[in-house]
Image (cartoon, rainbow, N blue to C red; front, top):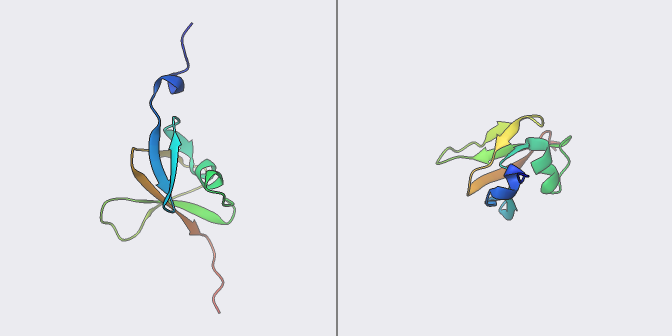
Length: 83
């Protein structure tokens, strides 16, 4: 009997808003990563910081995100009230 492929893979470390996380599931919906970070996907989007780009790449809630070792994600508020 074969093991599940995710059990054979080593875990991958990444961050969301500077907090450390690990997973063996390298492909996950953005909404699941937002929930892992403790934020509501209805209010926030997930962004990924890549290289020296000043703006994060933004993911929709149903986008499947590829998690690479050392990936840096941020939460982005969808709407902010302006005073």
